[in-house]
Length: 291
Image 1: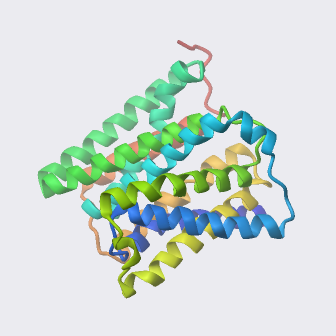
Image 2: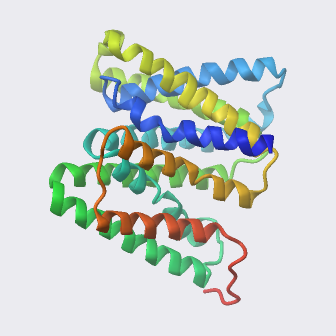
């Protein structure tokens, strides 16, 4: 029960990221830099308190792939934060949750996994749901909404790449891996931010500082800590099902707090997309035939 509560709390925290990001008056790359660096320092403190040690031998072996995982994480955050700037929290969240679909599509080619009939159906349904969301947003709100959804899909592609890359990293614990990836992301983003945004990052608006701290310490640091603490006592099936607390919180919050309205077509698209990715995770629905 404790593991379930911790994991749900982490999903609730992750589900509020969009609201926090909206109050940080910085470029998306700057917000990503603060998020990764502050979150990394917070998790290092947790790591030291737990008296754990880094598996340096495994890190050396996977150095190249860890570097690419840092690029994937940086791209994921930059485009996700851009998505929040251009469209509603709901649209950004739904487009971002297209990541599992990208993984299902790429898995047979990259991971050499078989593609079941169930997953083919789920991919098709998720794509239909995404088409409903895109078509409805374009017809009701125009170009800006479409750009936001597009950024969300790019963020989803980067996150899918991160999920696939992580499958090739062995011998490194989840907490250690997250610290390493956050550190690499921070180091990669520093020169990128200074080259693209200049040194304005040192002139952070006073009103943004509390939200930067929340984003780094709570949404990233505490969020990941609760996530890994809860994950240890849960089965994969439970983790997959409870993960949908995240989009539920984001969509519900956007409706109640920000008064963002969803049309019937958008609701249908969201149900099809999230429903398809949810069903794809369920092991009790089995098909004997594979392509």
